[in-house]
Image (cartoon, rainbow, N blue to C red; front, side):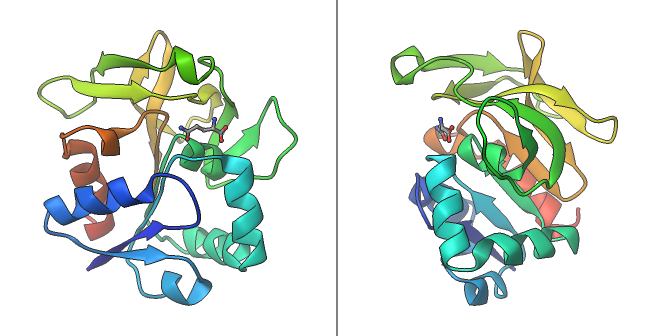
Length: 189
Ligand SMILES: NC(=O)CC[C@H](N)C(=O)O
């Protein structure tokens, strides 16, 4: 089993390190061909508009969309969550429509308003340190979406079948539990 980390932009190296810590083989994905070699994909935080532009240029946008429909397990953090969402409410931009959520970009404020908050996550026996950096807020979600964690009434970690998203950054902590959760998803556990 090999997990891909979308390497077009953003803090994908931190995700790769986390997978390495878990003893999981990983690969930086930059082309549609790379995508054929992975059993799951992580989309890091960064700038969603830049990521879409690069993905379209290299043919990754449509290819990834098809693969997700066919069942490829994906996990998007922050900008990755925006990319996977069904609809971005406050900017005119495309998204992959992989999970039935509506998001508002930068809803928690600017870079200087970044914050850390302990989160209760379904299935975790102790809180997870949620790091929020210009995070998106989920404002609508469908009935087939499972909320795994919330903060102040807004979901911050959600799953729909093969798609996992979080508005926070577990790759910036020392805690591998969210990545472990995704690896188990990719293994079909
Ligand atoms: N840390 C992040 O990924 C920030 C996301 C960024 N604000 C966006 O809208 O794309």
